[in-house]
Image (cartoon, rainbow, N blue to C red; front, side):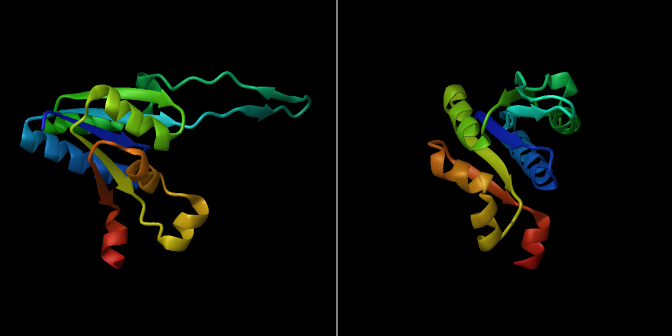
Length: 148
């Protein structure tokens, strides 16, 4: 294994995935790429005016708290990590980026929403599992494991 793609959104479950993915990268002497996909905001409502489109762009890496936190964790573990900030839908963008970089593995977190909540709200981890052509490792949230 040479390169691991780790997805983050800054949530507790993605922090667990980052920790696990970086430990795996260290054990395998692999590099890690940490990707944060931000969903676009398409419209804004002004208090005294009409709806207006907002130009969208991915946050700069230096301003992305989720990536900065992940990079600090990588540095503590002595793992070479490359940050990537992308604008779009994580379900589409994470597998697409994994293909472009020829990732050996995608590591993602799961919030452990359960069947009904997941069906109503959707599940990013399930969507990535469905669309990815590369191997995917889903790291369950600690609270989900404790209640399982």
